[in-house]
Image 1: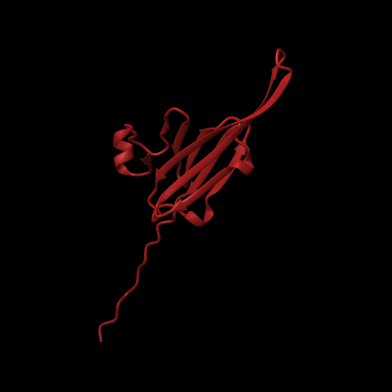
Image 2: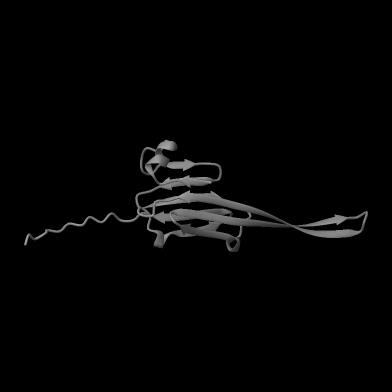
Length: 133
């Protein structure tokens, strides 16, 4: 499922009416600041090397794998089994790249929390006098 964020529709849908508002859903917190947007996500047990963050065609994708290894001992049979349980975590966000400086997006994973900073593009106002020939 793709979530639309950083757009008037998102703001209306989540009742965000002013810059700097914070919205929190199940495992994500979204915040708009003056110069950037922040996504904060709880992804406990996911290691940096098992995490991928990509942007393709205005879709920010976050994919993580959590691997748990278990040893099961069956004393009656005298057997020991090793099990690996893999859980996949995936989120997608629809971003408008004309408002996001995609070349300067930063991500950091700390204690099971992923922080993604999406800097806003500077609005450049072009002003020029056009000479008439």
